[in-house]
Amino acid sequence: MPLEAGLLEILACPACHASLKEQDAELICTGQDCGLAYPVRDDIPVLLVDEARRPA
Image (cartoon, rainbow, N blue to C red):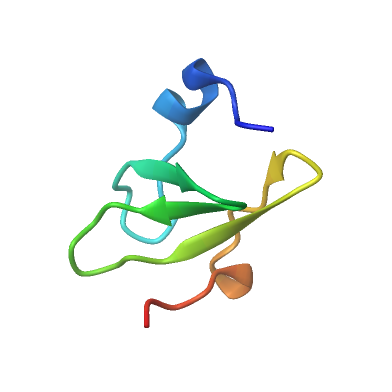
């Protein structure tokens, strides 16, 4: 289930403060030097840097 558009507009990457985009079951940081992927579990974004997946 996609996140509400209003919620996605106010969320930001905790590491670099760039905006996030939704892709599959993750929120991907749009910052060029960051690119962390945060999981979404049970429709709740887990915005913890320790839980984020590093870019490949």
